[in-house]
Length: 64
Image (cartoon, rainbow, N blue to C red; front, top):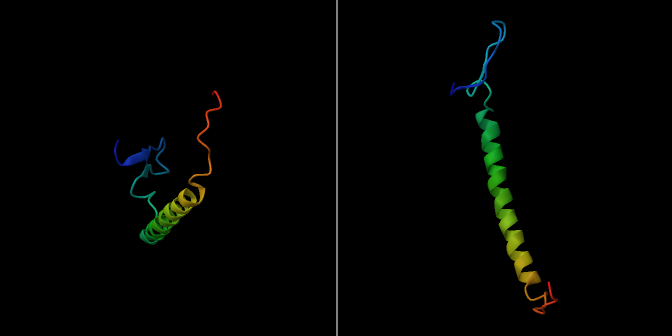
């Protein structure tokens, strides 16, 4: 059952496998490139927000 994602119940249509449903190599490489760029931007944003917002919340206990 491993390579078959969706078995076919008739003889007209072939079953969907991991090989005939995979995206093209170009599309996967573009997605990987943008994913890496996106994660780098996310981490830069998180570092900037951490530095800008550090010390903004007081340490007072409000009884919660």
